[in-house]
Length: 99
Image (cartoon, rainbow, N blue to C red; front, side, top):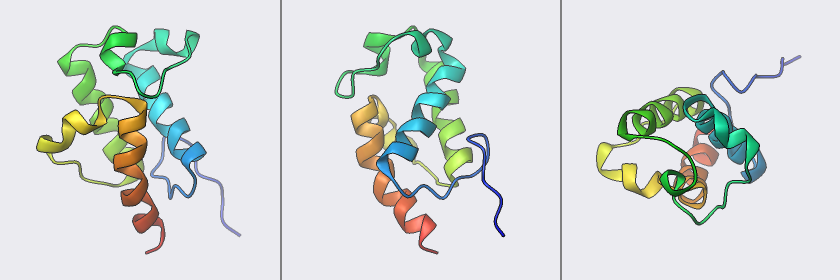
């Protein structure tokens, strides 16, 4: 019997809803105020919450650790919004969970 993973562990994400939860939880670690607002998917995180470049880097490193993926620095701008994260990470996590 498999035990359930917590959001803090590497997750074999299967659905967009699970991926969304991981991304928003990671955002909440660097910007706790994000839990009190509804994050607009197509709008930049920086336009919605108070995060600087170091917070954004920590957010991405947390996502890498949780999902077991590597995100090249050149792709960081693609993950500047919730929609961007879902579009970029979806294919990576679905292929990782199929291994």
